[in-house]
Length: 320
Image (cartoon, rainbow, N blue to C red):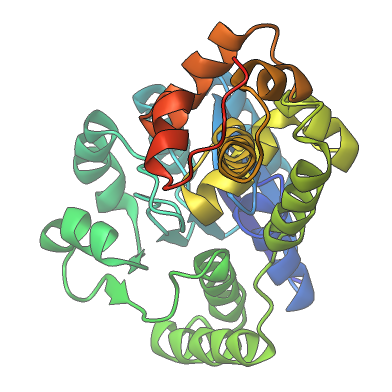
């Protein structure tokens, strides 16, 4: 069993990053050892935050496994700062594995920029000369690296933009390369492995649509008495932040905007279909005063309640 070292970031969904590398290497019969460069806080809606491990910790992880296992193949993925890059370059230069596979992660599958310009410049100068092959999974990576990589070391593979497929391809390539010591054959086998994954449609899916529908149903039932986003998040057992990610991904609106829109729509119906005074409507919807109601309604619709009622084509007798 060949040992393969993966140096990359952690994905808390398990769909890409370190977790996907280990899963693929193990599934294909290899032994995976690892060094974590960054810990991500993410879900199927994207990455919320990063914690980049200190460079000395990254270097310590790499040296610990290299000293013990002597892996001949190293795969490098997410590198987000120049200190970490320097640590990786130093250890690769010192221990000289037979193959270094680099899968540059310039942007995430959701289009988020993950590599700064200073890191990119150092990669071009320091890391690329150590690489046996560089995998381009999207146009951003190709544009950033293609001119600096000899054609014999450059590999652009279609169908790797889906979350985690690039990790699976590069890890499969590492395993097949360990078995065959033949780059061309290993590339063909890795491509076939990816085609199998695509046919199985293994892409991780979240529950955004389900939560969005549940949120809207809760709003319809509770907007008259509760307009606090935390209330709805608690009802669905999610954080307000995650709820905001869901609504923004689907509609481009915040949860508060959706609640306020529902409320404004109901207030408009009340103004145009009843003879209740504006003050009565305000109190029935939980506003503390007519002035507070008027301010909210004008912000949402662009009209004062009186003007909205007048422009509706209805002229109920006012009891104000």
